[in-house]
Image (cartoon, rainbow, N blue to C red; front, side, top):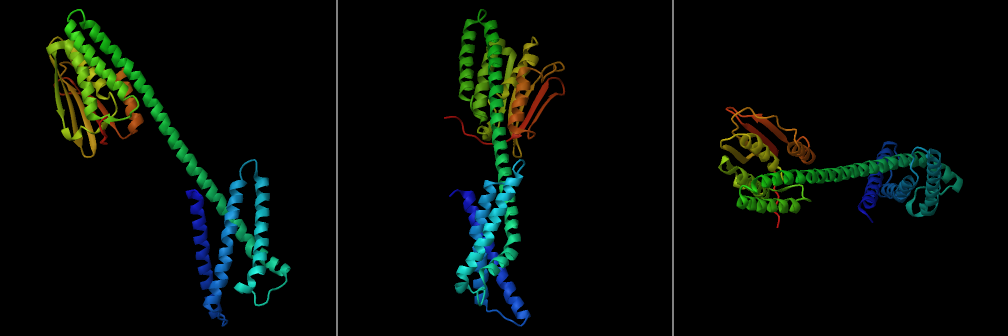
Length: 355
């Protein structure tokens, strides 16, 4: 038996047992108040027997409601089925009284069956329909939970599909830019171009290894970023200066794959490649409370070019929204004295590095 039907059986049995105990207390109290006391043992036997007879009948009514629920287009058929089920309950309880009265003692002398049946109608008609109503609430609540669970699962699948689509968009983007950099270098410095191809191969391997993963360890992301910087350093030479300020305790923190590469690429393009002298880029990772804070800073001498609308950054924003919803911040702002600061805050979630 699955968990939900088993839970229903337990709840029904507990409910009717509690009802039997409450009814026992009422019978004993009323008997004493009217001067016709009822022995506790007899009251307990009668009321628990009456209550426990309801347990299987309640489960039968729940089954009937699950089989024929009241819903648009099938109201009359459902009501007819429930009416017949309640009528069957009334008859069955009357028969149970006739069969078990000698053992339980509901009546000192058992009346004719039509009188027992009439009493069963008065005592059980309303209760039967109340149980039908409760059963509908149980069925509809189960449907609502199931639909909510399905909606969550569908949302997760859609998010995963969107992330894979965004990753598929990002990979050709950095590959195209890297190949352009190699093409600019191959005739001028073949050895540097060869090193760039090695770094590009490592980046592609990282991209393939992480294509099915939503988060990778920061150490993996930094290793891939170092290969990308190697490509750009081979092209720009000493003009590109890179500083790393990484909290070593955060190397297992999870980040989306290729999160930092578009940010560093933007900094190189606007702060280093566009000028003739050397430029410095700083990559930082620190913890602030329970959050991971990443920064990419450059020292561009002039006001930063408009950023945030290219493929790399728009892709980064979309992936962050998919993964974290509103629980992230990405701020791109000018630095005092020139240059740009990209500040990113996400929840700090630990993941293991790939084996």
